[in-house]
Image (cartoon, rainbow, N blue to C red):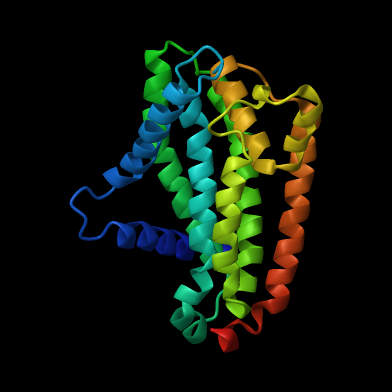
Length: 253
């Protein structure tokens, strides 16, 4: 990737600019979209169902889980169709095609960082000290990036040959949202059922972010290593499949 950094930067910048071109609010939509989702969900679930939320307002509890999910969901949705949308570029110029997927996920990471500014304002108002713990988030965020990139590689390559993949996985993401502890704490489930969340990588990421930011807890080393290994395995398998199919991309688009 490093030799193609300038290309990655160009595609990422193009992706961000094109998304908000001729928009009056421009980049403010990056903040407004998750903020609006948070307000709607907070209004519904703070009045209809009351959860124990680690001693912070439900809106903050929700926002900590919602931001990494939005990064994941928007990355998957955009990158699954990235090869199809860049068909002309694939046919005309040779470059490692995974750069298109990497740049798409990287652009969504930019959105994530920008929207996180609102979260840190909330945490500052609540007098939660983040000066040390915020650095603990970096390796977790890196693993989530690699997990998202790995899954995006797999889906984008398959979608090029079977266009139903993008529609099918849109449904999967809707279900995945509700089986991930974003709008609810994991503690509402009986202890003998909580092991099921270990099968959900996004549950690990969101639980870990909440533990770090809201409880100042370090991630468990065994869980960290387990998720890192699982992510690297997914990335290896996805990259292998992607490169195996790459020679046929120009014909498929």
